[in-house]
Structure formats: structure tokens, C-alpha cells
Image 1 (cartoon, one colour):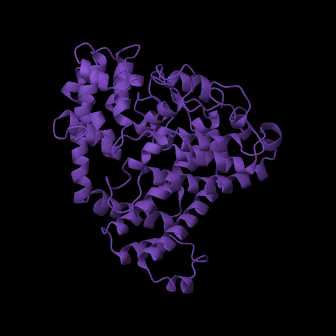
Image 2 (cartoon, rainbow, N blue to C red):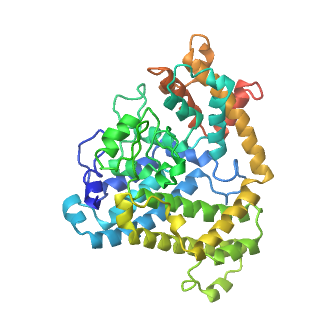
Length: 449
């Protein structure tokens, strides 16, 4: 495999042969803009990153996290792009790919990386999965295939994200393709290019750690994305899977860098972590050739001190990730190396990063406030799913609920589509929207009062 194989059709849009490249914006910049102006992206401003319903303006939500990840991804893509174009100048002649295209493509994919997350973050994914494993959820899936059931019983925000950006509801428009992004952006977005079954986590590959494609999108992905971009197949007799598009490793690294460091910073802003602890651990991640002690001493405000250290830490991690990717790029493009970039970091960075992860889990993610609200989400989401999935399957018996379900989610060609449509309605909600609807439907709070 060569880079030119991957980029031969990367600038083409899903279900659209028209060429959009112009002097003002590359097609990947256009993708970025389309995503920013999409309603699915705007909803991220009220979705949990670390703390649901944060009262402090310092605390990130999914939207600010996605913007920061896109910024880091652009830097990482530009770093790699310079090296790749210099090494393979035929990319310019054959594929019309410029150095900056790497940054624009990675940043666009980063922008969408959390777009499919349900309310209440990862605990929301768990709540949806547990509902479909429960007696009530199981009873609704008698007509589903094992893979269709697995899509729901192991609900995955990555697969929901692909459906959101690549699927157009039949009742919404006759123009297919969701946001109609470039094939390159869809491929770079897809961290786990496989179906829900079989479970291949034992293989210890980054691309099969989870799944990222529902049965509703598997044919589209195979023919329009994997096929045209020459993704390396790794199918088994009972399931379809591919190696990642190489730049996906940069998206994963940008996300990992941001949430490890930024969640740690937010822990300080929320008062969960003391200043000295955060300062000490961030100092261990710096390139000390760039650290200016005299400048640091001139910063008096503790918040600004942490901001300064965070920026230097991220810069060092980006440089390290870029160097590792370019050192092993031949192994990434051939599929021989299928590991997260942060797993390949040297011990002097890997150890302090792991310490930050452990502290964040114990003192932030397991804090009383976070646990209380996550437990509330595990009550809210199953209740809404029970109501709206049942209504979409049996509209004649549940006419009022069916009318409350937005028309674009109505019906489906079979039970799987009907259940998935109703589930996507719940998953697409913001945290506040889900709680408010739950209160309304259960008489706790009346709408309009």
C-alpha cells in the first residue's frame, strides 16, 4: 500500500461526483465548515465531557472539547503532512494533496469524533446498552438478527456518529449522504471500521478495540468508503472489518492528548485536584528546552499558571506523537502496525500520563457529583427508550407518544430500523433535553409551566 492509494478518491464527496476544490478553501476545509454549522455539532454544547451540567464557565463540554481536539489534530496533521509530502512528492502530482490538506483533513475528522455521543457521555452508552439487554428491551427485538441486536446491546457512540454524518433520514430529504463530506473525512473519522460482531478485542488491535459501523451503514461503508479508499480488509467468515485509514491514528492521538490533559486541568478548575498536584504532573510532561522558568514565575494567577503548563504539555505530546507516526508511517499504511500512538510513547512520557489517568479516574470521574448525575442518567435514558422505541414499533397503540417523536424518526423498513430510529432520537438529545423530557412524561414537571 502507498499513500497515493489512500488518497486517490479521498477528495470525492459521498454520493457526489462534483469537484469542489477551489483556491479559497480545500474540500477538507469545506468539510470542517459543514460540520461546524450542523445542528448535530451544535448539540454538543449541552453534552457532558467530564461533569454534567457544569456550573463553572471554565469547564469544558463536548463542543469545546471537540474544538480543542480539532485544533490539536490540525497541528498534528500539519506536522505529519510536512514529513509525508517531503518523502513522497508524488502525492502532489498524482493525488493533488498539499501539506496543509493533512491538517485540514485530520481537524475535520476530529471535529466529528464525539458527534454521536449520547446524553451523559460514556455512562449514557452504558445505560442504552443495558436497556436493550434487559427483559423489557430484549422483548422488543424478537425480529432482529444477532448483529442487529449487538448494535443495540453494545451501543456505540462511534457508530452513531457515522450514522449521523453519513445518513439522511428518508422523511428529511431525498438527497442521500448526511452531511455529504469527503470520503477522506469519513474514513479518517472511523476509528473502529468493523461491525459489532464478532467481538475481536482479543486481537489487541486499535482498529478492533470497539466497533464503529451499524448494520444500517455497513454496505455504504464497504462500497463507498472502504472500497474507494482502498482500506485493507481484515474480514472473517462471520464479520466484516478493515484496517484504519492511516490518518485516523492522528485523530485518536489528538483526542487522547486532549482529554487526558484537559480533563486533568478541569479537575483543578472544579476544585477536585489541588494546584500543587496538577502543577507537578504537568511539569513532568514538558519539553524543558521550551519551558521558561523566569516567564513562569512572572505568572501570579494559579489558573493562568496551569493554562501555561497545559499548553506546553500538549505541545510536547503533539510533537512526540507526530515523530512516532512519521517514524513508523510505512507500518501504519500497510497495516502492520495497529496500535494507538500514545501506546508507543517513551516511558518518560507514558508513566506520568498514566499517573494523570489514574488520578483523574479516582478523583474526578468517581467524584460524588459525577456519580450522582450519571446514576440519574441511567434512570432517564431507559425510561425514554422504553416509551419511544415501543411507540415507533406500535404507533397505533401509543398514538400520543408517536406524535411526540419527530417525524424524521418515524417508522422504518423493518423492526431494526424502527428501533434504531427511536434510539437515535434519544441518543441525539442533549443532557438537559433528556432530563426535561423525562420529567414532562413522568409528571414531575409540566411542559410550559
